[in-house]
Image 1: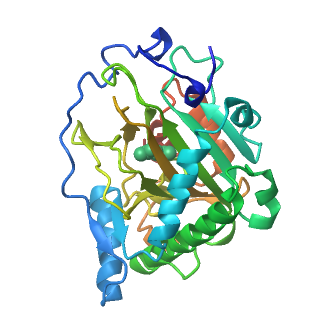
Image 2 (image 1 turned 120 degrees about the vertical axis):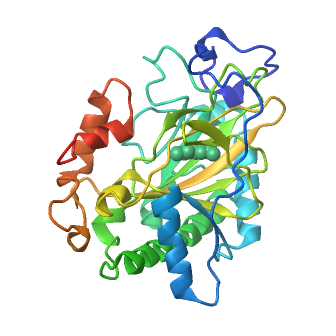
Length: 336
Ligand SMILES: O=C(O)CCC(=O)C(=O)O
Ligand SMILES: [Fe+2]
């Protein structure tokens, strides 16, 4: 069977290798919707209040949405449309980028990077590429649709600026020195696009594994088709798209630096019976060399976590039976 689901046609039923067992499948189509996600206006007149809202959201909720964020709405629409077109391109073109090697600067894969060995597959294709420095990576990006590099180049610059603005607000709010997250701590800049074709039976399938973002910080643009769910008080809750807002998710490395003050949400993606869904994630993460540890000013007596590098974290993550990044983090807790 063709690996990339975006290359399938006339999908009438869910292949067996995409059917999750009853305990891990969604089981139903309707889920409660999250109506109280913090919505933060970044152009608010009182910057100190905005910083406080960001910190509270990271501590109490684990994620938030931003409006008046500075990324032009037309650019958001153009980029989303570009990706919708991209996944409609002929199968042979997309397959040229197929790889499960995370060292490749631009790659497409389906389900997870363990496609060849996993028992069950997730209902998604993913295009991931590196973005910074732009001139180093842009040549590795797709050159179709025609304006791909131009539009996505601008999008990655604008969303990067926004992420640094939010990180700077977090610095201020936590009392860290300005620029704390710049340099090695956020050196890896990835754009990761998920695409799910309509699924004949969303009760049985998952569009993405249950996970927590392992990186420093994530920015997410959803299209207008719902699918993202957050685990809150033991219940799966839908995060419905609000046009032109962006979702911000503090990753596990930010949780560590905050000395466990921040929450990194557990989330997953369910599929849609009628419509294709595309989302654009921008991920900033540490370089392999940087030492991640709680910021000294946030430690009273003993830090909650001991220092580690990102590769050490991934080693603990891959060794864990459940592929659970939150569990992997426990490995570095001073008092597990
Ligand atoms: O597609 C979504 O809504 C969520 C994507 C996500 O969680 C991720 O890429 O880490
Ligand atoms: Fe995620």
